[in-house]
Length: 32
Image: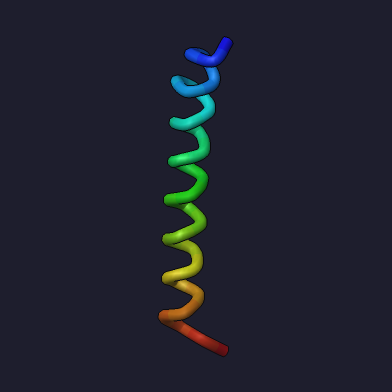
């Protein structure tokens, strides 16, 4: 089970984290 978590969990988390980082960058790039 740990292996599965590291394999899938980490990948999904990494992708989400990357998306969030991109989103934050865009948000900071063009403020209101």
